[in-house]
Length: 391
Image (cartoon, rainbow, N blue to C red):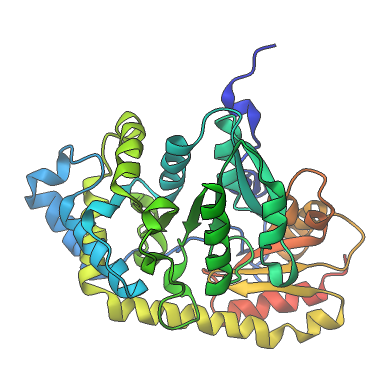
């Protein structure tokens, strides 16, 4: 029987977990703690919204088609920001704007892979990356992480075949939260360069990295064009999730190939979102620093309050950006426990089975906790409910 491309992959974990909520009620003394999705729930700051509203009312171009690779002023502003952040020089011609970071990944894969080619993904993986590869007939080579939830270069090298085209890394990581050391990214760059592969580095959560200064030196390499594709999202930085604004930094020749895909799918990124992103770059550095500080406070609260869970056999495997990644001590699989936690403890979080290959034993022991929308009191409540849960 013929199966369409979408049959090649699974249902999105976010979509699936929302279905779990149907018919479930929560008491006033135990309201829902939604720890499933890594996205801001609040709107952008007032100034940014006002700039977007004024553009809608007064700027004709806000309603028209724009350049396929994004508006020149936003590309230039982001190139300047990247240059500052990574202590290097990136030009507007090396930057493209996309309709969200998922589309940035999709465009990158379309420009690199044919059906039957391979991409290495560390596991636990970001599920939308796996879903896109599945739907394009690209084989995923799962790379199980090692100590500290970090991928290992020698194990990645052992997976490479003549059909391998890329290695895709996410740092700070989704779902594990860990920040990849600069030396590790250097080692993966060298591996990709040695085999003629592309190193895709998704840095959606870069603005919430706990480290100061440039998180890596890949852009400082004179030949970065030949190996690196950098992905970014404005969704988390400026709360623009619904406006779908992402970005790619890559060699101009690569961007020309991606342009064919982007022109076919969306023609151009939405104008209003681009206007908001540019205003954010120009005006929200101090505000964003405050957002980062708040996320780091929540991270510290999880770390400081985890001891009672450790005493009950839980393990904190990874922590950073928007995520904590944990292992549970129970006999049942995490996908079973996740639905019990929803019904019995009023908590929605995603099981590790949604981030690992089917049948992988580690997925059955693990959970991703997305804490971006839970303040410190909510984090204490979360830890308390987990500690009371009997399994």
